[in-house]
Image (cartoon, rainbow, N blue to C red):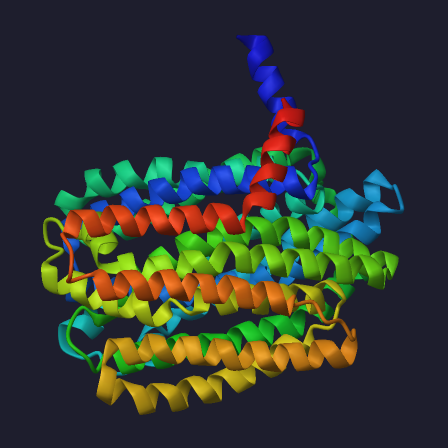
Length: 510
């Protein structure tokens, strides 16, 4: 038994290649997201799309969003700088960098947390300007007590970035299981006593447990005696300076969420929580496939930046973009067809009614095209970030804010909640165009394989059109079987090379 435990420890802490790292992250993310769906199902069954859940989500959003922005910006710059520091092969230098960046980040996050606790009325008005009466008061009360959320959530992002920089993808991704293992029973236990607030308590407990595990893993890389030297370390100054544009772009990006919630708060009750449920499904897909791949690719992109290797950068862009399109195009068209039955299966029970299913379905369909567009945009963002060109995300964020407000205003009156999410898709498309123009001027790389992309799109659209037309013409069960089988075969065909590589890698890994 002891030997088996030691073997697992060795496997988890072993640095991995992009292929095995991506597989590891996908496996653990799949497990975590599957448990996350169980958590969402428990949440939906107990509270549906109630006004209290709307208010609670608004109360938590500032803390979780700001914490994610600050740590996300710092974590993004930590990877290339950490790799640069590793080259100097000085363990004390690495320990100092790890300790000091965690310290500085914690100070920043504590400051933001205090703002939310002291000025909850302002932030509630900012994130949900249409709230009034009991919704507003409920959100304000909850925001007063969650000022520490940015710190406990932010530590997870920073610690994970450090492990990813060392290519310990399996170890970093396995820890995320802790969160849902704790939160699911916590929601069930607290729900009879605290109603919707049970989700908040479960979130806090689950995050603290996950942080404890990560702190234990990093304990040998942290020396509190080195904190006094923090602002004399040029690597810390460089990290903060380069992360500032990302921080600003992320902060400005919150405005898009604020705008969406502001528009949604003018719609029927439950619209905000409907957006959340739709985003959960979208996040599940992007985290599993896109997030897994991007985590490992970002480390390699950072290495191409350190090595100043344009050929390696071009090869990685071509391969990754092609893999993303092979995965996401057929999956997206399948998701559009299967959205309603899938959402009904996942959520429709207890307080989550058929009307709730319809609202979430509309929201998800509007978001769906971002499943194709956002991964390529994200890849280009990773290129600019890894090469320390952090002002570009700030530019694209400013453009997206203006466009998001414009599209929301134009579409919400005619399409309601569908219009809000369609707006997000349109903005993503424009961002992709802008990023590619900047990429061409900066790196002069043509990375999209036009013939292959045309094949992927045409074959997926043909299968989609066929089964969309057959939807009311044949038996529902037969339609479901044929639709799923056809898209599965198309997916396997388009990804045959990727699947073969995965199988070969798994055999070698054994």
